[in-house]
Length: 250
Image 1 (cartoon, helix red, strand yellow):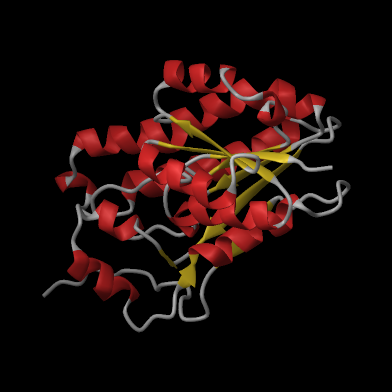
Image 2: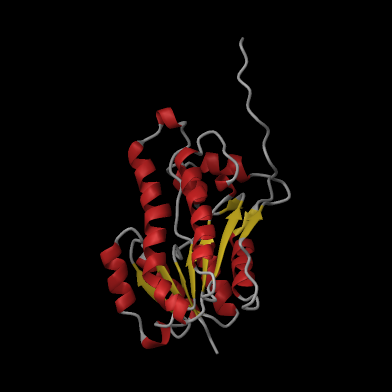
């Protein structure tokens, strides 16, 4: 029997790759995002029987609730929530950061994620479903300029573990996936469209791809129901842990 996944941030990168991968493996997908034209293209490509486009900003709870209330009957039973929507804004140190960018990251990466999760938990419990949250290695390893972005992803990781504890005995599986370097639109968004910064970060690094993470999400989702992956950290072979910083007198 086909199962249904709701995937946020499905208009690009990991979210879009997740929709393609899940559909290829027999799932129906509710693809959410702000860019209607991209969602429409996904539906046209993969089929309206396989993908339902739900266009809304995850930070807009009224629009989200309206979209969920309007789901076709064939998509109404959600078995898997993939909380992928998120972003990083800015690379400045905390003392030089834009407070509005900090608030946008918190609103998107934290508040919207917990709000949608809370909304869907009753249905997920009823269906013995699963929640997969996209965190980051930034949750575990600080770096200059990571400040609030890293803090939001640390929240996602800890929220996942707490949710797993609270859902003990319900049959609902909960996983935090924590990727390192993945080449997507991420850096372009973070730097306001700086192609040079994008190339400097990814050039010659052989980073992971959105498809790599999508395959990981699908693997976790399709494990036998008695298995739970609590946290899963992934990096490309070219990436490893950085050293400590030391400020020296000159």
